[in-house]
Amino acid sequence: MMEPLISLNIRGHRRDFEPGDVLAAEYQVDAIGDDQIQAIESSVLWYTEGKGDEDMAIHHFERRLPSDTEDGDMRVLHRFETTLPNTPLSYSGVIVKICWCIRVRVFFKGGQDIFFDQYFQLGSVASGRVYAS
Image 1 (cartoon, one colour):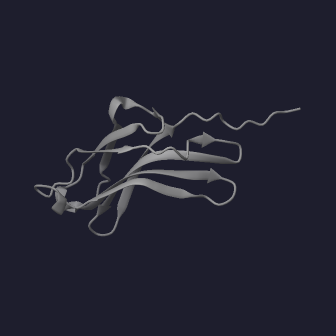
Image 2 (spheres, rainbow, N blue to C red; image 1 turned 180 degrees about the horizontal axis):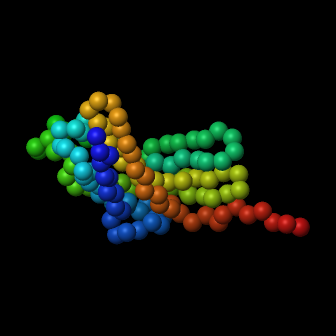
Image 3 (tube, rainbow, N blue to C red; image 1 turned 60 degrees about the vertical axis):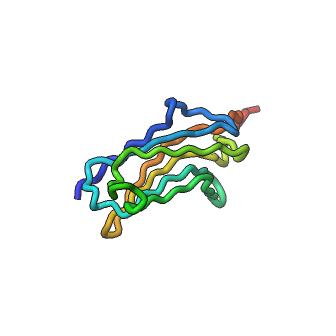
């Protein structure tokens, strides 16, 4: 099976958001037969990277099945939106980073899946810096 293409766009082509802003996105799946898709999940989530335990939380989640569409074709353009929360804000520190992204995950009949992440910035917190004395 050829790997399908996932197109994901943030409407307005923005990458920087403030708490309370509406994030609107759309995605489409191509290069695959409509009968091969079992489900598509879209989510807006944040996760941490760095030293110590890594955390992850989902802010917005949507799972679509072929039965949710008029003709069962999951490849068509789909739009969603969510109001972004007050916290946690994106942060790129020396020890930890907080990253926000939109994730679209396609599940195929037969058990395989693929996903695509589109990163964005929530808020404006100064990066952590190490100062030499």
